[in-house]
Length: 289
Image (tube, rainbow, N blue to C red; front, side, top):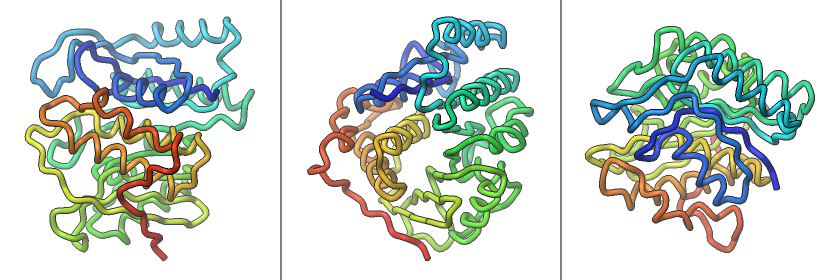
C-alpha cells in the first residue's frame, strides 16, 4: 500500500483542503497521513468562520514526531495545499527536501492555492512568491488553476498556446508535470471548460467538458482535483489516463452537487476507476501537437 503525507487546511464542516483530499485518496486505496495547516469551523467563503492558523512551531513539532516514529521517510508522495502563512510553506519545502534526500522516489505534488478568476488573491501577499520562487524548484507536480498559472509566471493567458508557454516556464524552473485544473480561453468552445496536463518531456493533453454553472460554486474543487490526479499518477497511470480519470471524478461529483459543499461521500464510487478499468472515463483527452 502506498503512503501519502497530505499537508493542508482542515474544516470541521464541509469539504475543502484535507477534508476534500484525504477520504478520496483513502477510498482509492492509499494510506494517508494528514497534517492540518489550519483548523476552521468552515470555509471562509461562507463569510464568517472561527478557528486558527497553526503556527510554524506546531507544524514542525508534528513533523518531528513523524521523524521520531521512523515513518517520515516512508511516504511515496507529499501533497500540499492551502497555507495560512508563508512560514508554513517553508516548513513544508524543508520537509519535502529532507524526505527526498532519504527517498528520492517520493513525489511532491504542490497545489499552489492563491486565488481564482473573478476572486483575485485570497492569501497573504508573501504566498505567491513562495510558490513561484521556491516550490516550483522542487515540485514534481503543480496543479494551478488559470489565475494561479498567471501568478506563477507573471503572464496573461488568453489562449491554449499562451497556457503552453506558461507551463514551459514552470518546467524550466523544475516542475516535471503541470496540471492546469481550469482553463477558459478565447479559442475554447463556448460554455465549456478545459483541463490541461503538460510534462517536461513535451507531452501535452487537454480535455474539454461542459461548463457547470453552479450557484453557489462549491469550494474545494481544486483540492479534490489535485488529490485525484496524484492518486491516479501513484496508481501507475500515464498523464493522459490520469487526466481522463481525474476529469471523470471531479465532473461526476460537481454534477451531483446541489449546494455549497461537494457531494464526495455520496459519489465516492466515481473515484474508483483506478481499481476497475472496465469502467471507462466519460471524457477523452486529446494530445496537442
